[in-house]
Amino acid sequence: MKRNLSFYTTASENLILIHHLRELIERLEKKGPEVLFFRGVSLLGDVYPSLGDRGMLDVDVLVRKRDKGRLEEVLKNIGLQENEPGVFGRIGFILDVHTSLLTPIRSILGDSCLTVSLNEIFRRSISKQLDDIEIKIPCPEHLFISTAFHLQSHSFCWEKGWKDLERIRQYYRLSDEAILSEAKRMGAEKTLAYLNSLRPKLFPSWKDNLSRGERWIIKRVKEGKLNQNFGDLLFLFQSTSKGKALKEIFFPQGFSLSIIGNRLWKCLRLLKDTLA
Image 1 (cartoon, rainbow, N blue to C red):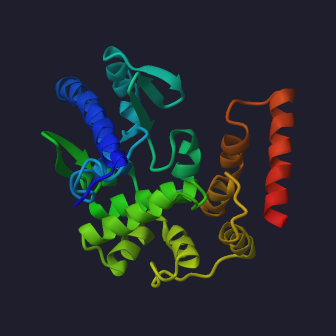
Image 2: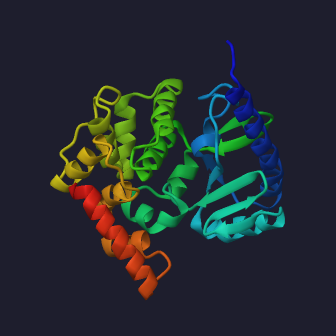
C-alpha cells in the first residue's frame, strides 16, 4: 500500500511518544502505582495496526484517586512539569492524568455520572504489547465506552472519535448487546442513545427515549451549530450532583467578578447556540 507523507510523519511522532513511555513504565514498575493507558495510545499496534495510521496529541492514563499523588511524584521525577491541572509535559511529550473516564477537569461530572468503580475497570483490564513494551489498557467494552465518553466530551464533532469507535468494535468483535449490557452497568446508556441519534446507520440498536432538552441539543449538533459545552450539558442530565458539576463546568477556578463576567458571556453564547 502506498503511504503519503502524513503517514510517516504520524509514525515518527508516535515513535517519539513511545520512547518517552519506556522511561515512565520503567519507573512505574519500580515505584508504582498501577495505571491504565486508554484512548489513542491504547489503540496503536492492533486496532490501528501501523503506527502511522492514527495520530496522538498526548497520552492518557487512568489512575485511582488514592494513587494520584504517587503518580504525580513519579512524573515530576522524570522531568515532566504540570502545565495545568492533570496535564504534565516536556518537549515532545504530553501526558493527561485521569481519575475518571472523562477529562481531568471533569472529575466531579464523571464521578456523578458513572455507576461503576475504577477498581472494577482496573480489575477487568488487559495487557497488550506496544512496540516492544507492555502496557495495561481497559477491557474492550470499557475501551469502547470510554471512547464514546471522549467523543461526547467533544460534542460529537470529533470525526476521529467516530472512527475509533468503529475500529474498536470491529477489532474486538464486540456485539451491540455486549456493549449495551456493560453500558447499563456503567450508567452509559444515554451516551449510546446519543450515538444512535447522530449516526443511526452505524449504531442502529441503541434507541432510548430522550428528554426535550436532550433532543434539542442533539438537533443542534446535527445542524452543525456546535458549542464546546453541549457534551457537558448532556452529561449533566445523568449527573447525581448537578450543582457541583455545574460549578466544575462553569467556575472551575472559583468565583470572582472577572470570572463571573466571562462565564455569563459564555452562558449567553451557549443559550444563543442552543436556541438559534
